[in-house]
Length: 405
Ligand code: ASP
Ligand code: MG
Image (cartoon, rainbow, N blue to C red; front, side, top):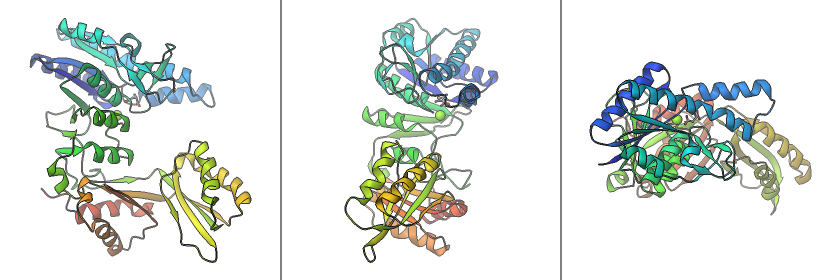
């Protein structure tokens, strides 16, 4: 008998009718002869509602008590789903993280899972029950409730699949799978049958919100194939799995846009050892992630540095840079929030030359100016003006023939 872990996201359990729909699907899976573990998120909008509520009583709600609060969302859905399954004649038992010893570190709101005790789940499954587990939450060694960061239920599901040595891990959501790009931006976007872990990691961290990045890292580490499917139909979905020869033949697998970054330029810096360190060290110390960095060729011993940070951290980053400005004696500091980062991703880039050239040519032909560039083995990112993002994605999608069969 095989063991399947299925995870249902917020929209899939967004109202009572949808919860009953999940109950039916889960029961069908069991009837096919599988042992079923179901991981659920909070009902869509619920986690946001709770976080918002917290801001009504406190200026900066973080830490232990915030996790006590947001973890309640998933407690509701495991109970409702179990009730629905029982109502349909099935057997189900719900579990909160502490009941399964889903042990994490103590970083509230972004905890990492260390271990899971699978005894209780195996016991329930062997009694013919469907195990319904609260995603997103864990407990730390002191018994405090922790949560895994937004979208963390995906990671709960993969971690459970690892711990239970599951045969399959299926992530059910409101889209059919992973697409070549966001179909709302580009109607020609095509669903991918499969994608490598590495590509998915790039796509996830570049702003394609299908899977939490950490869940993909975990699946890659343990080589667990991850299926992304819709809970509203019976389509095959996309499997995130190990790289193979087919994937290498495809130059570009997907295109992403990220509108959540801002750009800071520091002008007229002395081109000397130690300047960049003095600029970026305090930024790092404040936990601000710098993504792209470009330093111009120096002229007369002076240079400009431009870099991007998450928009949410822009204010703080600017404060830091202004403070450092006097110390390092730079010129003007400028910020621009109206930028977009457009990236093309594909493991095939490793073995195909000229991909960057084709990307730049495509943008140039449309008069789109590239402000910054960064590359890795399987990715090329450019920063452009935000108002041109949609057009850029559409043109690149066409240029790399991603809409074709
Ligand atoms: N409910 C949590 C969130 O909204 C976890 C999840 O949905 O995966 O982030
Ligand atoms: Mg999600």
